[in-house]
Length: 253
Length: 160
Image 1: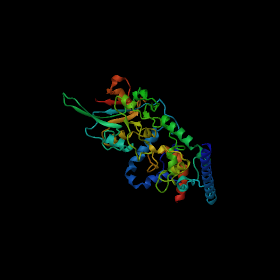
Image 2 (image 1 turned 180 degrees about the vertical axis):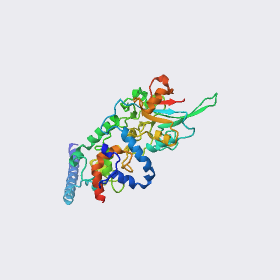
Image 3 (image 1 turned 45 degrees about the horizontal axis):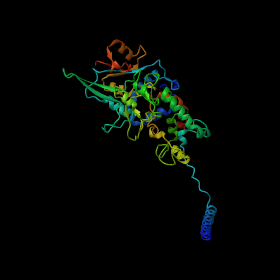
Image 4 (image 1 turned 90 degrees about the horizontal axis):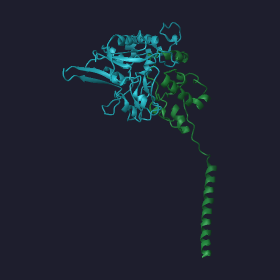
């Protein structure tokens, strides 16, 4: 595992990944960014053969004061990463959406992304008749499509309108993100990326755009950026009255 | 009355017998002329330069048990986040995708579709899973590199 750390390739052995990577000339622009990402990934990734544990609780903190009005980079990044095709139909899936809040008295408006809040006591998990809707040990709420029967009870139960049902046959899925007709789906917190030690696509896109409005990390790790921010700043939960303890927190609402 | 009835019955019996004899004769004629036709076994070509010499398990074991391995891995990955490459569906596709259309589906020459058509077993995997390998082996997946490194070297040697 540690052998794969980027190191000067002095021997004659040809590393396939290097070869492929260099071969993809279109990706050359990303070369300077990629090593940094890789190193970061290695530092935080769990070994592939180990199950996730509840020592970690993945979460996100959305700073609504930094979220730019009209910017939809997080939504676009989510669609690209998860191969979500949207044709502006009412039935289109939306894993993350930008919501505009306006105070009618003062006229102050705010823009913020809302996605699956990855609740500790998730109503979708509660109501699922087959056990398809479940929470991973590390707090990420997912739908197991192998078990989902498409009853949409979870869609009704979710107070955040975070879940979508897929009505049409899908093609060209991301190999890492299997999706198909007849199942309910929602934000996975880019679980395939998180398991590799990367950040969710929306978080990456937001920081790339220079807003840094979404941060991602382990809420259980007191040294993590997110845990310190949550401990040191006033943050709020959407529909805190429901006492669901969501993994997604908001600041500056 | 009785006579007329039995007369008609005789006629019917003779007719049925004639038809039976004829059909048996016809069957015997055709079966001797050409042998019993079976569905042809699929002809599947695996690109050895891509896959290396052997599968992750013995071929005979895989023929019988690949579905068990995949189902096991599926639950491990989905619920526990275990993403080892060896028995993963993606690993199958990476080696077994056809060189013609870069997929395990498409025609009966393609790896998954070919055998499953022959065996008349429906393939539900592809309603959600991609049937093509990942575009480029990402530099963003370092964890995978270690487990593939052995065949990768071989591939490199072949190219040289």
